[in-house]
Image (cartoon, rainbow, N blue to C red; front, side, top):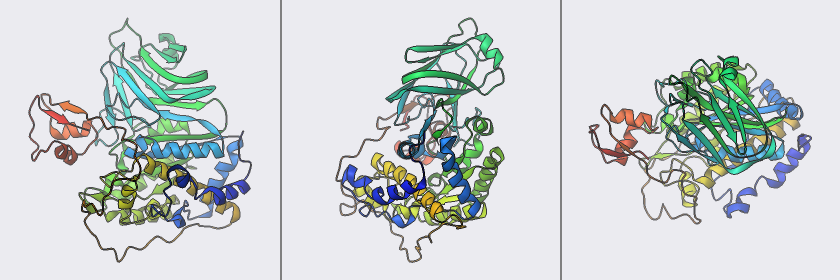
Amino acid sequence: MKKIPHFTFFFLFTVLSINSYITAQTEVSLSDLKIDTLYRQINYYNLETAKKLKQYFDQLDSSKLVFFHFGGSHIQAEIPTSKARENFIQTFSDGGRGMIFPYNVAKTYSSINYTTYHTGNWSFAKSFQTNPKIPLGVCGMAVNTSENNASIQFNFKKPLLNQSYKLLLLLEVDSLTPEFSVKLDSATYFFSKQQLIQHKDENYLEIYYTGAINHLKITLSDSNRTNVHFQFYGIDVELNKPNGIVYHSLGVGAAPFRSVLNIAKLEEHAKILQPDVILLDFGTNDILYKNQIDTQLASQVEETILKLRKINPDVLIVLTSTQDLYYKKKLVTATIAFRDLMDSLAKKNHCLFWNWLDLSGGIETIKKWHQLGYAQKDLIHLTMNGYKVKGQLLYESFIKTLNYIKLHPNQDQYAVAMKSYDKLEVSSFENKETDLKEPKESVTQELNSTPIYYTVKDGDTLSDIAEKNGISLLKLKEMNHLKKNIIKKGQILKIN
């Protein structure tokens, strides 16, 4: 049952609480972080889009509202999306956890909500790769194995509550799929050869389970066969009920905007998961290294929009801008051009737009975020607290726009003029004590603080190693103090 019956309480909730969440947690205020609350909204540019957004939330008593949130490293770790999800389900109702993926198998960092482990030899692919060797699933990754006794395990850091669940295992079901079991705490579900034959050529298998979920383990158990192939794309964990918010975090570290176009299984998986609102939260990996907009970016964005609307003509698409960025101590001024491009494409293609650049303070403000413990030293990534702020402000931006639509049902647009940076003096960022002070509070350690190393094998190239491990060639060379692309067998490289 939906917790909030109508929009009257939305408006009261926003007015009473919208400025209080940071001070309650850290004693740092919105103004300290240079956040400009004038931009705390989701812009729309036609009445039909506004009506559709309101309709989706009005129908939450009887149907689910499904979010897809695509992005890079900040979304893979699920920090801002977990905060947004938490607020949405508290205000409305909970429809389920959403997608989980075995990141450990793909040799990358996991979500803040769970850890993953595996046995056996697996292959993997990620959406930032130019030509992924495995068809990618909706999470932007895929894994497979040909070992008949391999396993994958998920351990939730905070157990999922004792409720009735429907789990959808996204995988290829064909003649090579081995028998396997799924263990949910004390309950075990076995998929026999006969069951797999019944579901041949389908894209998912269902499990219905009632209880708390601390652990989930998939174990391949077809010891009588040697020719097996298990291709896996993740699990959708939803409540077995017809309504509520489902918020999927679909991020891959190092992914640029074009990465969504690399997801071969997107159409198949979207038909299963049925998204209503899709956030395309990219940009950093598109502009960071060259500080300019690629000539193909606009067409890639529009191709992505077209692809998503072919899947569901009624889907609402939210384009976003990036936060203030620095690279090699220099301000990335292309954040302004990227903001302007996303806004113009939102208008042209009847999308929504979230102006995160101006909301988060604008140009040359991330230094203050770092000083207060909300951005990392690289002035690219945020800290745990910083990403939580982003997730909170994203949620509040939706609520404010819903309030506005309720109060102005016939208004054909809702947008605030963007900040002007015409007089911006582009300055390099020097690591001086006057600019870069230690955070006032202890900041949560990064998820991937333990270094990871790779031993060079026959046939390896530096670019291949970078691509396989989700980092740029330039970053890999910097971490290992390499001036050239020459490596040799047995050489040990730091990859994280």
